[in-house]
Length: 357
Image (cartoon, one colour):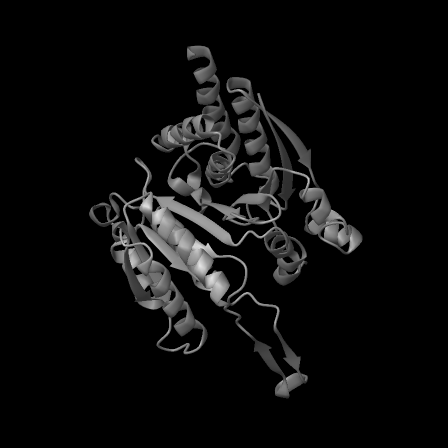
């Protein structure tokens, strides 16, 4: 029997609710398949920041390093600036453990209404491979002066090593899919960092002759993603551009509530981290309205990463089944179910697998 050690960080707002959904699903998985999860729940959040002045304890990264994977709910709450919560928790985790790949798959599911006309969105199924370690999200810069004369400088940092490894990951991913990569750029206006990005992605593409690679300015790509979303297979993008495009992709496919992500450390020193994209959503927290699918799909990505392919496939199938019917979808997808009702439906399908086997 496989024994997997998980660190759970519910965080803030609906992160707490969807983490409860994840725990219920993980219990169903270990009741059905030959795996045991040991789960350590950590109260690292904006609430903790208010109490202690820190999002996580001083030895927090050491604590996480003792686990096989990290599952995160959401972080952020009114009264704590977003840059404080982000740089106090998420970014240190991503960079300490070498999680340089941010993987964000998205697709149109049967039964799920989308804002894009069905004849345009049918068959949409693609993945955004976002560089997760540097780029526009850099610590280099500062603010000079005060008042009307104040100046803020933010330095983007692109290295050949980082661009090459994310491009390599994107090309390899495309080889296991439909064989096409679109590279998001803005090198017509950003003449140093994005021209380096273009050159390195081109160099990597040469090593993958079975992959068709095209380059597109990010503004044109955003328009194409709305008008022709089924054109995409794999998108590779810098930290900021990938962040924006993946949220747009989720909206095109129906709701940001279904969007998962994986922060992967392909050759890093520690665990990978899995989280839904939707954020803490304080306006609906505690009301049972949160869509748990983004978290449950993130659990699928985690199971795949841990090479637990059979439960991953079963959970994905259960998610698809829940999305087909408004009675087992949340309100953001035109459904009538609560967070708990969706979770219970998916868990019941997994437990049914145990009975049938």
